[in-house]
Amino acid sequence: MLVIREAFSGVTKFMDFQRNTGAAKNILTSRLDTLCKEGIFDRIPQREGSTRYSYVLTAKGKALFPMIVAIGQWGDRWVFGPDGAPVSIIHKQTEAPVQEVAVFAMNGQHLDPGDVVIEPGSGSYHLVDTRKTKPSSEMA
Image (cartoon, rainbow, N blue to C red; front, side, top):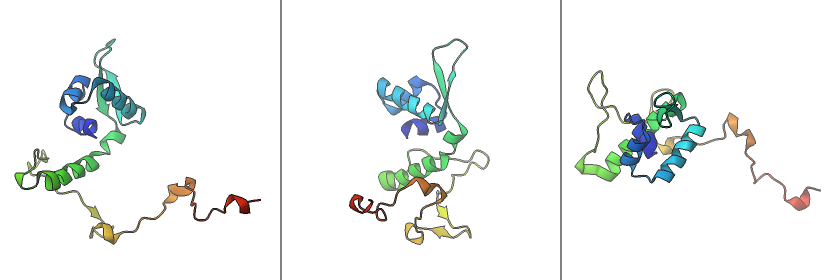
């Protein structure tokens, strides 16, 4: 999450990720490799023939923006509290802070966790409901 947060702040170089996150080189290398394999980052040579790379968010990576903002806002409220936020996210055009990230119903109603139910979606076909599976002794 820290690496992705830094990318949203404009960081693209390994050494800058390392400095800003405090991650050990081997750990950061592993994380960046995974993020590239998962399609969150593209690894682009800094110059033609260079062995140094820039790490740039893909469309899949940019889609994480609401989550990063929400986690930051949670930290501002519950970790930093009355001392205030360590950073502000400002809309470039209006120069105003962004609104708090929230979940809304299709009709625009603000939702809390008690207002929803979690159900299997169309992609849940691969999940096995063990409560409905017969014991192995009954399967013969």
